Length: 443
Image (cartoon, rainbow, N blue to C red; front, side):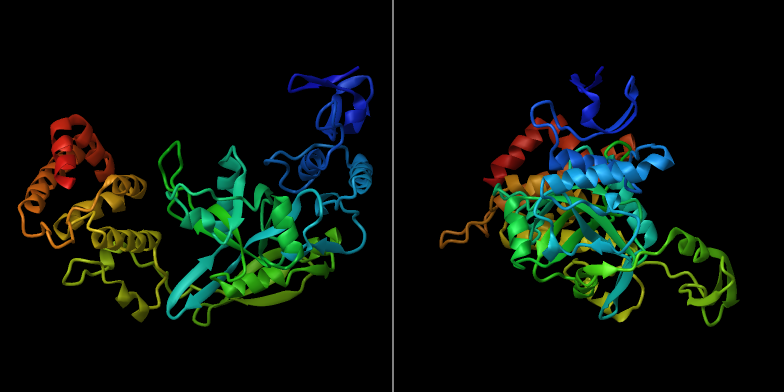
């Protein structure tokens, strides 16, 4: 008897759990990768992930309670035969639980690796925070993905974007646990490349640094989807040093909390103690009480939005004033900071003239990706050699054409109820004469 998966017929020996040898539908947790390779570390990793709290790709295997210990023991034994480290999801229930720091990545298989941590950080008066809601969004948005998430070196994915240069991966995030642990750390399963594994073992890289973007939109609905890890990086000099230290210091043996004690520690009731002092009493299941400081009880602190940012005399956003306040900065303000920086670079290279800046700013704020693609096609508009044309008429003619395109784009925005970036591209498509004239003037 065999069980067919992916068009391949596997025998009962290919599965870690066989409920009934005569009923293939009871065979679960395949540990053979294929009929030729049979048991591999990669396939064992998928089976082990299915036994973790978050399951493999969100799918947790359903086994009889009395069979779980035996199945885990079988998978641990197969890891040992392959001289590989078994992940925590199949560890024996008794004894300590080994948490691996980057420097202790196993020689084979997937490594349980810290990705992010709950907390708040300050730089001057600017706030940065990762909340439980943020981590829940990170997990949900990862589970939407079809492809694995890249783990690169020193944020090369960001810095090399659009350059055409290869960006080697250090590893690939295969899965993320459903929620942070008792230390507030969110963990993932990472498949390291041989090169990265060797560099981690040699302590050439010690820290993990996440790139979390709060402005990513759902590819199907177009709605903001919340905190999203767009990439991770191995780094020796993380931006958030406190986070790096926290991630690094979780290495080593920690005491495992029993299920009984975990139930006793569950919060039964939360009582507001003193609103003015911002404290609350947490009553645990075992009757003990703990006092917490709860931020934000006095009044809701709203983040700074872009409409509150004043402009300087040259029309640029004046972000310097942000250092004088104590409110958190909203995602659209961070986005505007990026836009202003990239506009400054384009103006410096004379790809965009100062008179054109307001129009390109609207496009970038509406659709940053479209703006970046457009800038790639632009050529310097002013010849800075001795025969310069800065005093000629070409710049004025280009400004007129851009003004006409801007007017048509605004009319299309109002008529079709679409964003500026989409309207801008539509006008160029519908008015090829204007698009052609614009290209001619930019040469």
